[in-house]
Length: 138
Image (cartoon, rainbow, N blue to C red):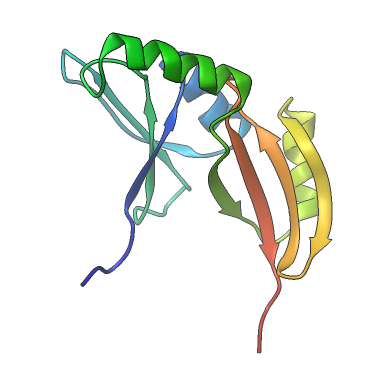
């Protein structure tokens, strides 16, 4: 029925700050930045990989009413949205060190897991994400 997931979203509180973080600190690339009047369609992706994008979305109208937007902003700020996305890398330790030196806030250092090595981080708004170096399965 489906082929793959091509879009997901992360609620952010400031799209310009989000763009700076996701591109200049995490190393993702800008995919789309379109002003639709009622909203700004701002997406990033892993460089050179058009198969999946992350929408950096402001909570509120037109996607939800203003009160729901306010509540969502509070939850994002508290870090209560849980896991938002995962990135893979060939070298988790090196990626961790590079991003740490760029000022990315980590919630967990690289740790050996049954599926590989991974670490946890947060964006400037409180969204949690993981970076994993997957073990090669036979």
